[in-house]
Image (tube, rainbow, N blue to C red):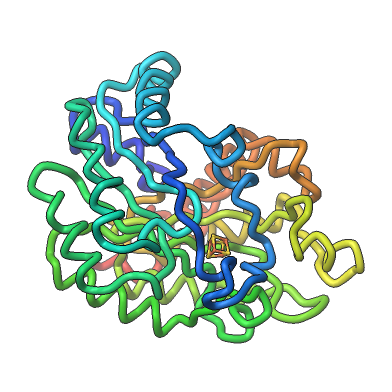
Amino acid sequence: MCYYKFSEYLKQKFGTRVHKVSVDAGFSCPNKDGKISARGCIFCDNRGFSFNTRLPSRPLEAQIEEGIKAGRRRFKAERFIVYFQAYTNTYAPLPVLKTKYDLIKKYPEVVGISIATRPDCVDDSVLDLASSYAGRYEVWMEYGLQSIHKETLNFINRGHYYDDFLETVELTRKKGNIKICAHLIVGLPYRWGERETNEMIMETAKEMGRLRLDGIKIHPLHVIKGTELEAIFLKGGYQPMELEEYVDLAAEFLEYLSPNTVIQRISADCPKEWLVAPLWISDKHRVLRRIEERVTEKRSSETGLGFPRGFAAE
Ligand code: SF4
């Protein structure tokens, strides 16, 4: 096993192919609507991240049904996890959240729910609601962190800090039946003209290893049209990574994680018409192949054991 892939985890757990159906449930984000800021994170345009946000708005049921149909046809999947992906999927009053999440109960082939949100938009009542699905469903909370570094989080206008993430992880763990996935970005700027150093990125990786989260998503920072990051990039304030730089950093990042942490994503998806740079992002298969080759090379040349750093003795 090169690294612990989500598809493998799901196959082991459910004994069949499970497909994640992404939906845009019509939520907003406090970092865009003015509650925290009106700017949003400098890289954010959800049309560049989320398939459903690029389509004309459709009822949630229609999105789930189309996703199930597509998953059956394209991936021969038999079971499904509904992934509340776009924007901040806990940013609404509790009854609204419940009505939207409850829709999964209409579909017997759905075995899980995954809720992406900001760590500062979760409280005990939201987690109680998420936890209430756990008897029958696999429940994941996905927290956008991106980096542990304050300077970086300030520069990208994230609107929260690592402490918020730590508090939310602790609160979530108390429920005892919710899996936690962190979203991280490699290649972030921490000031004008400066990308996070390798040391900064590995400090984030070490923290994720220390926390032994259930899952991680990593993606390379890419510049999407119309974002603040595009304006910074065009003025020379941001230099995107080369493919091989990302491959090295991603492979090293994985070494710090617990072998039980599932890697839910390690590349990016962005339609060509929205992508400004770097263009290698579009060739996802090449990115994944190069990371796997790099991980295999490192494991055979450096340790020969195939264990991630810090976990060899487990
Ligand atoms: S928190 Fe998410 S949705 Fe909100 S601005 Fe940042 S990336 Fe966009």
